[in-house]
Image (tube, rainbow, N blue to C red; front, side, top):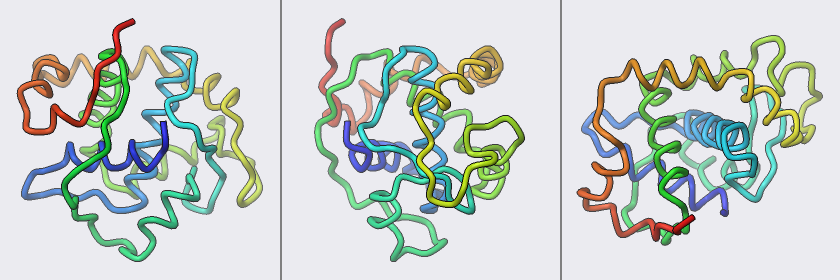
Length: 174
């Protein structure tokens, strides 16, 4: 999937009055979704690569698309391309959103900077290989599952199917 398609999908999830997704926070939400997708399903969620930038992992195309916003909140413009995803992938993206959207861009950036993360020790603009992202997030899966379980919410896919955004996803059958 193209990263900008995933970015627009994530932005469509944050329709509250307090919507606070900045370009940096969006990068981190994409990174966590991609990392956990690699760890859980063994394949990449996005087709582009992450690079190690000063404030953490970045997909250059997403940066270029939203850099004009600066550090302000991104206003979702409505509409989104149809994504071809299986229900498990949509559930995972929803779980990542529920767990990590409650944190600020700065807090998420700090998490990506911890010793032992794929970003740690990389040169500026160096590509972060998916093999390293997968290995790291594989060690974080159990903690993530506990965080998801701690958030008392109904099944994300069921709620999503009832929302006005349900037409954004064409569920693939596995």
